[in-house]
Length: 55
Image 1 (cartoon, helix red, strand yellow):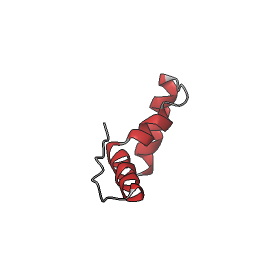
Image 2 (cartoon, rainbow, N blue to C red; image 1 turned 90 degrees about the horizontal axis):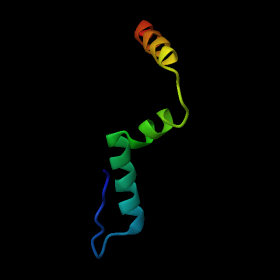
Image 3 (cartoon, rainbow, N blue to C red; image 1 turned 90 degrees about the vertical axis):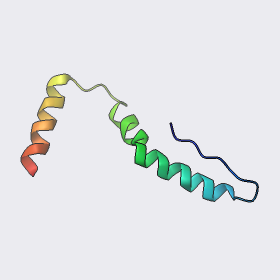
Image 4 (cartoon, rainbow, N blue to C red; image 1 turned 180 degrees about the vertical axis):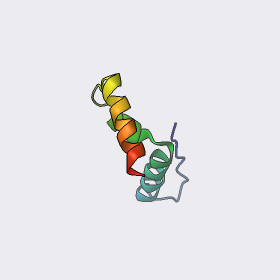
């Protein structure tokens, strides 16, 4: 869980940037976008094979 503690003299913009960076590192946004729509297991397998083939 991403969490940012704001000190008394820290600006909100800086804290927001810090929070966004933490979310990116933890993969929260990516995970949310993946789960936005249901993907059938067979389609997941196809995508996985497709990704491996690109290397």
